[in-house]
Image (tube, rainbow, N blue to C red; front, side, top):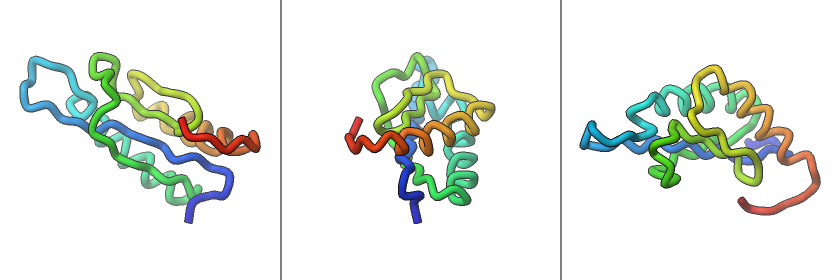
Length: 97
């Protein structure tokens, strides 16, 4: 069950068939999504896999709904992303972003 004060984490996992063009999936976003899902499950943070944010050249892209957009995310960012998801819900503002 999601933490009452957490925001969902959105992860682009788009994988392009044409290898000449960048994609989040081609740059490691599947591993990031998996790490977020594992750690997020313990914290009650939902992770949603998406197909595109439209910023392929800046990926992997991860967004905390209602919070920060992480461009060029790595496995090293997982802790900061989850902290943002928990913090984003603590402001008492309920908006979709």
